[in-house]
Length: 291
Image 1: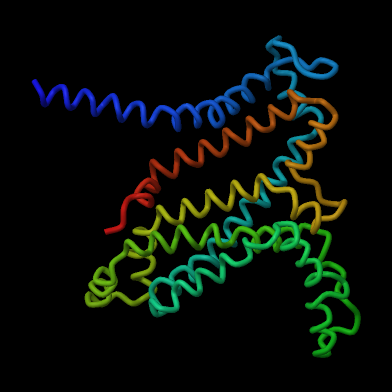
Image 2 (image 1 turned 90 degrees about the vertical axis):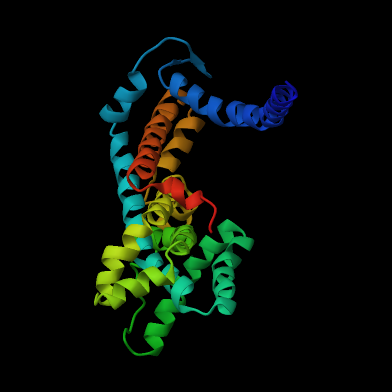
C-alpha cells in the first residue's frame, strides 16, 4: 500500500513539474502555428481578418505568381543544403576522426566564433570580400589574372548562396560530428581488416551509420535558409527577391491571409521533412545519450 501511495505521489509531483514547461510550449509554440493555419483560410478586412472560411489566399498564391518566388527560394535553400553537406561532411569527419582530441575543441570553437558577432555585420562583411573593390577582385588583379574587377560576384543569386553557406555551414557540421562520434573506431578498423578500402568503408559503413546527423544537419540548414532575409537583402540586391521578403511585404500591406497561407506551406514542408527524417533516417538516435 505504501509503495502504491509513494508511486502516486511521485507521479503527481512529476506531472506538476512538467506542467509549466508543457504549457509554455503549447501556448507560445504550438498554438501560434495552429492559429496561422486557421487564419490562412479567413477573409481579409481593412485592417485584420474575419472568420469567413475561404481558400482565396491560396488561389492568389497561384494566380498572382507568388509561387514563382516561393519555388525560387525553395530551390536556393535546397542547393545551399546540398553544398553544405558536400563541404561540411569532410570537415566533420576530419574534426572527429583525424584531428587529435586536444585540437578538436579548438576547431569546433573556430566555427562558433562568428556567432558571437552581429548577424548583420557577418553578412555585410561578405560585401567587402565579393564587391567590385573587394578582397577577391584585388587579389586577382594583384596576381595579374584579371585586368578589371569582376562584376558578377555581388548582388545576385551567387552571392546569396555564398552568404547562406557562410552563415549556416556550422549547422551542418555540428550534427554530423555528433553522429560520427557514435561510429566507433573499431567498426571502421573491422571494415578495413576485411579488405575494404577507405572509400568503400565510407560509402557502406560510415555514411549509413551517420544518417541521423546528415539528415538533422540538412533540416537545420534548409529551414534556416528558407526563413532568412538578411543574405537576400544585403547580398542579393534589388534583383533578388525571397519568400521571406515577400511575406514582409504582404504583412506591411495588411494582406494577412496571404502571408499566413505562404507560412502554412512552409510549415507543411518543414513538418514533412522532419517526419521523413525520424522515420527513414532515424534522426531521433542523434539525441540519444552517447555511451
